[in-house]
Image 1 (spheres, helix red, strand yellow):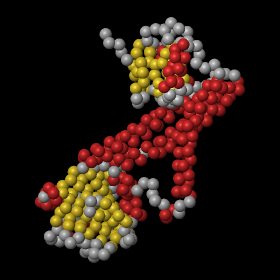
Image 2 (image 1 turned 60 degrees about the horizontal axis):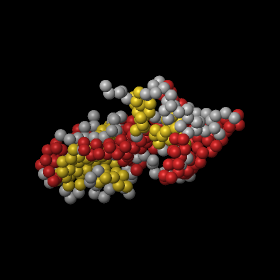
Image 3 (image 1 turned 120 degrees about the vertical axis):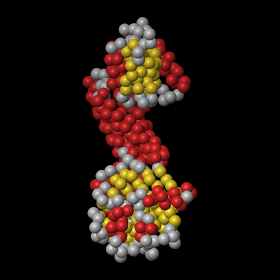
Image 4 (image 1 turned 90 degrees about the vertical axis):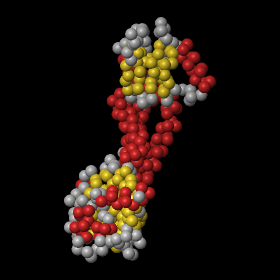
Length: 389
């Protein structure tokens, strides 16, 4: 009969090596022997075949150098410890069967010194990153005038699902760095007190270790998830272009929530493309026609009215006009708020073209082309064709 395995999450970082040791010994006391730790990280246990099993976790003193590592592992074997697993920064040892192993560390001061010798480089790097980020944020909020600040997140960020998902990872990574730095400081102070009292170094909190690793894991999942969502969104995009035939584009546009030239009583326009792109926070429809100029429609159905309001107002703040292909570029012509019977509406008048930006409920629509803004029927046409109800 095949032995059952048990899998548990290994929540411990290098600073938690003593907490990891206590946890592994608890598993041994309950009859479980560590087989190894998979990436993730997941600890895999088998039923223990002996009762004298003990575990010890030590900070890596070899620096990953082959000769030093070989000598160190031989020293540990001689002391009654056999290497089970190596993770970044730590070694996990199990006691040799039938042997009463010697303690790994008897000098708390030397143990703490070795720990911080290993962590110094990574700790300094984390501190430098925090200082740089804090300096940049301080300069952004307190040095750069509010009118000149480039937004950290703009309406265009919502158009790409990979950006939406990946952006959530950044604050989590910063939180992880802050918590990690705080844990190091607490451990250093607790270690100093233990050394002064002549006692063993304390173990870090398992709950704190778990919280840090959960945050790091979620951030990593979001980074990978953002990359995957980019491919998923591309795969879900539905597009009909003039390469599929002008008639195919025209038929697709008949029932789509877009404005066509024929809706304005104009003839001779050629439909170029119709794209439907679903997203996490909004669904996008893009349509364009061509004659002597282009007529472009962009419609965004947001997941909430508040999001749609922010989206529209950020477009106004950015002062952009839409171009063929759904690209947005800065405009020298200002967007002006007007009353057209919608919850929010703005117009931008250029040389031979106009742009209307509308918001109704959770829908934002942009139309750019040769629009007759003096036509009293235009608002009703826009409301009907763009489905702004």
